[in-house]
Length: 284
Image (cartoon, rainbow, N blue to C red; front, side, top):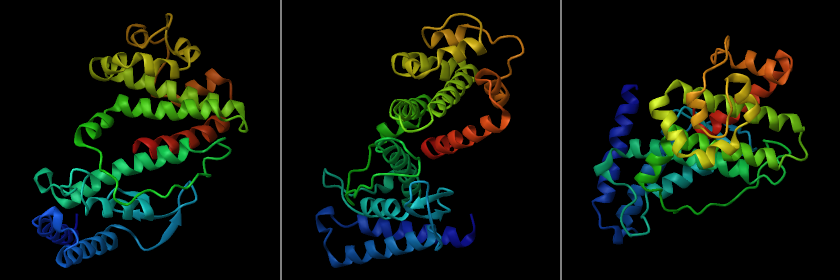
């Protein structure tokens, strides 16, 4: 981080500290309003590049160095208004005891982006295109998710389940899209879940087992049988059954090409679409 950003971070945090030093009941105090406007302006100018683009859902977005992603202007501004306001219990949304203002902004922005992508994808009625969406005017002063819920969602399996839900919706509601595309996406998701479980049986694997009833129905059992020896009726089977001879999970493309009996260009085409969606939803 450059010295300029360090200086801006310090300034933003100082102003935020001054704001929350006021009683939350004084939110309409002219001095509080002045601080809010100064923080909002400095944060937006500092962490949102001037050039506007359009994201995958057709909404105006700007690249943000805060999260190294394109961020829809409405999402960024809504979050700033929220973080500068009060929670439902009447207390300030920003709690300096939990970290700096910029840290809170970054963490909440990552959270909001996950919700943004999930909402825009699942709200599409037919999934005719991943680039179409139903716009929704969100309230500017919504409640920020509590830390416990945020921590739970950050676990890999919870994120994978959330992403799996989107894949399942895509599969069931994609009547006007090529049927094979939904199946390819289901296969990519199954492969990634298998890879995650196999890579860390003690932590990720056991967590996946605890979510068996939610996670396993999202998987393509025929692909599990292709990758591993044995039968599969639950997540635990992924843990205990060995990979087949010659199966190297680092070669996803090659394995999926063989499983689906498709060419490399076809696999790459759908893999790029799937991975782009996965990064958008999971932030990774």
